[in-house]
Image (cartoon, rainbow, N blue to C red; front, side, top):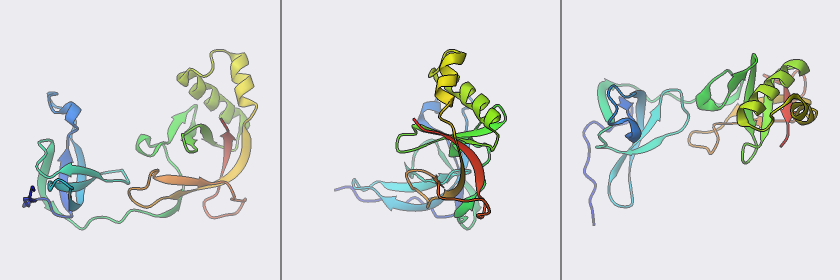
Length: 190
């Protein structure tokens, strides 16, 4: 049986930089800043550092002695993640993309539905056409018209999920005008 060997710098609150394995051999490969949120021991006895990269809501479980993990000197309290309702902003890490001046995201169990955060049907349609063309779903204006005719205007609220949830946020369709942080969206079901 393997026993856990403590790593002196793998402590909650320690700031780190992380390089993905694919970038280890890249000259000046990207280093992502983050924080150790805790440690755990894997079934094989290896000490894992739980790392939350800045701007993300979930942890990576990394062997504490991984060569792409650099422990910095700074140790700070682990920041709490915001919870509850929020207004989306363009952020690839959280799945909100901007197309034609409109925020676009995928929702549903397999990301099959599209959400366009705007109350303007023409803007939603333009964003949908751009996005669907990028995905190769539509090739011409006739196909695009056929797809976008199913756009449905709704009120919705977006809510953060707890750390390490399968998805960082959910959308609730039961919102009505006047609800806290409710926004107009166009929904395009699969």
